[in-house]
Image 1 (cartoon, one colour):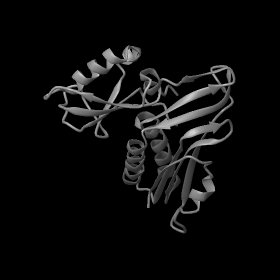
Image 2: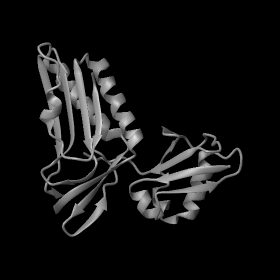
Image 3: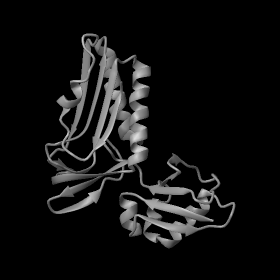
Image 4: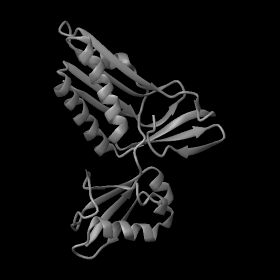
Length: 139
Length: 81
């Protein structure tokens, strides 16, 4: 069963990985987006995430369901945190489980790419000396 | 007709509010509402070309017609992840 969540507390990947179906799974690929300490050479304190929650959850749900169909996954997970996320903490976690590894790699990449592309979530850089909204995903 | 308008992220800060109720004429389209909010909140003008609009939680186009009671959301390009 695919899992899509928007959460306000710390993401612990193990809480989600434990639900991957065994022994059918032969490959599990996970991605953790982590708040790094610098952005454009400036020192970050944290990132602040805001979402259009109902639209974002719908979009994340559609994305994991789509990934399962496209890549024949056994399971898929996407969790995005909102609110203030400190440096070193996980802001987004995605996972894809499949019989063989290639589908899991492709599925996991598809999910995070799609979330960054069209999910109504925005981040604001909270620097030690100021703040600014990130205008769009350029990575 | 009365519409519920919401602003998100940077738009919320530039508009100085997260939502408001706006009165529009019957047969108004998304583009008409966009012009009204840009007039009321000129700080949003620099985002005119990149502004994303959702009508009742579905992405909307400028030529979509509005109906009384619609919720229209305005937001900037996404930057999650």
